[in-house]
Length: 367
Image (cartoon, rainbow, N blue to C red):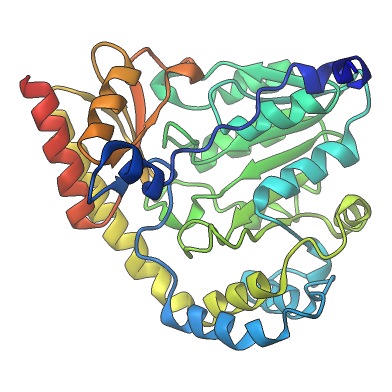
């Protein structure tokens, strides 16, 4: 039977997401005893002991369904962010909240504006949903061209997604730029700002988007516990928006979409928020050290406000990443994103992991 004849065009046109190889597979394939994974922007510090303890205590009750409303987590996060509980919606990672927005807002013939060189999920999700994506190229400095994105909005646009800081470039748009952009977008178009890397930012002119919610009811802020809080394996993200919009978004949210262990882990992260400052500082220190040493090798490094670097090397990124792989270092080629033939993304690891990566790059450059 030809199942393809049953499927929507958007499904047929979609290439499944391709995750990086796990460490165990690389060790097995290449016969390596030590491998460092710097491909997926994970926090190498791992979850806090208090988070592991909370998960362990909650594990005894996993025979029960989780709280479908995330009641306690909602109350705790609302207090932390100083918003109303009705303004929050949780997802199985912020990826799901992106999908919820598109499913709730977009009908056939309507469109979603986003950067052509940004988080791959935007392209994947909009292709699946009626091929509704309207990608806009990045501007100078590998940053979102917010003016061009505003110009791309038409009467059929329902949603604009801005990734700030941007994945995979690490760049950001300033508070002044973002405020100007919001003023240009019609109030009947939802603006979702994806701030998955918010806690890593150290730039003083970065937008504090929560302060913009009251004056911009069409704004939705997306954040996650996956990155700086080290919960990538548990998948818990959230959106903050106008209560009336969030109420409608809940209609498309799957029941029990955030599991019970994720909920208690996120609450434990909120209880230990004082740990975030140190994680931000240590990441920034390693990020600047790694960037400087890569530049000393003659490679281009895009200035970053995240826990990764976009590096451009001569030749093909695939050649570089394969050579690094044989040296026990997993990084991500970015040439398929249209960011240059030699573009690759390198996550910031622990100091020893970064040293191994830098040693591998030095060997390749010296060959």
